[in-house]
Image (cartoon, rainbow, N blue to C red; front, side, top):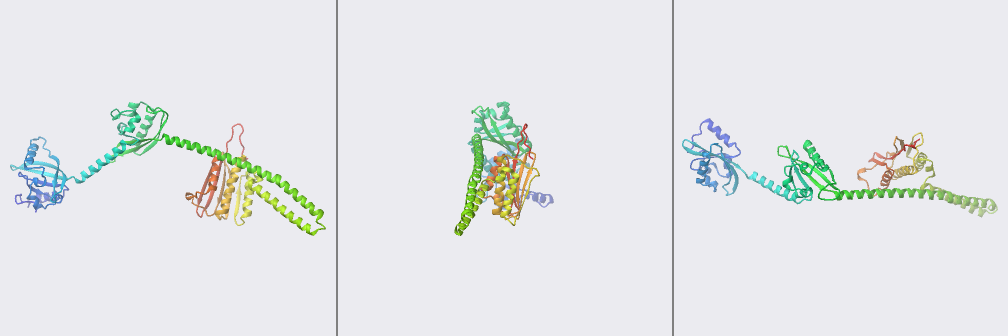
Amino acid sequence: MQFSERQVSASSEPLRLLEFALNTVKDAVYLIDNHTRFFYVNDESSRMLGYSNDELLNMSVSDIDPAWSKEDVYAMWKRVRTRSDGKAFTFETHHKTKQGTLIPVEVSSNPFVYEEGNYSMCVVRDMRERKHLEQMSYAREQEFQVLVENSPDMVVRFDPNLNCQYANPAALRHLNVSAEQLRGRRFRELLGDLACVQHIERLVSEVVQSQLEAEGELVESDNKTSEGTIVNHIRCVPEFDRNGVLISVMCVGRDITAIHYAEKKLEDSHMRLRLLARQREVSREEERKRIAREIHDELGQHLTSLRMGISMLRIQFSKDNPLLHERVVHLMGLTDKTIQVVRNVATRLRPNVLDMGLTPALEWLRDEFISRHIGCCCRLITPEKEVRLGDEQATAAFRVAQESLTNISRHAQASEVIILLVRHAGSVVLTVRDNGRGFDCQNGKDNAFGLMSMRERGRMLGGRVDIESKPSIGTCISLTIPIVQDADNKKVLE
């Protein structure tokens, strides 16, 4: 039973409905009489304080709130009644539970007079969760403040109208202004119509309109606090309230001048290394060409003369000397094998057919592949008219095709290979495709120097090498060679 004997009978239906409604309220509800004793409490009051309803109905306010005596309650009632607005008096205090624990609560007290008696209806809200959230929010705000105040990055917060709300010390030092000068004003008002100001305002406006993050690089050459060019990376992030409404934009600027300078030096170093590699490759091909010609011409001539001399010995002296005849024939066979080895070495260094053009060189490469792989079909598809390339371009294309066929021989286990040479308006594309085992391009081996060499050859020519492969499907390697045509002397690819 929730009403004491002093209460009005609750037998009527409206009072039972009122009692049911008050018990469904999530806040505690007290009805206090003129002696500051509890006249009525709902179920939430018992749950929050740990007392039964009967126990509470035999207690007074001072029993659960030591900070409020009977005189304090009377004084509060008097102040509320003398006010003309008639609003409830709301305050925060602590209520003691049956276990002796003090819990923070918010009390909304509404005193009234009924039949010459003073009463007060108190709605009490448990503040423990809200206090916990406030403490967490305060702790996070303190962490954020310590982090931002001591960060070397520049942090600035703007409202949706591009007015500055906050700037950390790093930003103030960079802008050479005080927090009072900047707060509530636009950058343009203090710094003028600078390019960097326009860039920042454009980024912030983009975030306000799209409500998405935005970032970019800001190059400053007219900064007041430092000399030279400064490069900053600017990142703008939208901030929303609990209802999802944009309330501000946080901008974080990081000085990446040193990183930018290091990247530029690294890029220049890579360029010099590529130029060096290109020059080394050109020199290597020239050396191969020279050695191949010397082997083919000089050593080949000497071996040919030696064979002719041995043949003359056989004709002149071995007729009547069977033993000499046998040895001369053996020397002739050995000389023939040596001549063939010399030809093979010269061909491996640089095939003579490469001097005739790329298409004949690819035909020779195809025939060599077919002779070593009887069960594999290798087709060459080229334009009807010869594709004319420079010596460096033709050599690079030949080496890419040669390396591709070598990889197919070692790893692919393919049954069909297609070599395709296509001429476009501004480029020539050489493609080598097989239907072999393939591999996963994402998990390439670190020691796959053949593929690296092909890619580097493409870069050295100003083109590229594209490698596509999937397990059990095959591999496709394409070399794209750009063709630069002069206005006065156009290169005709025929």
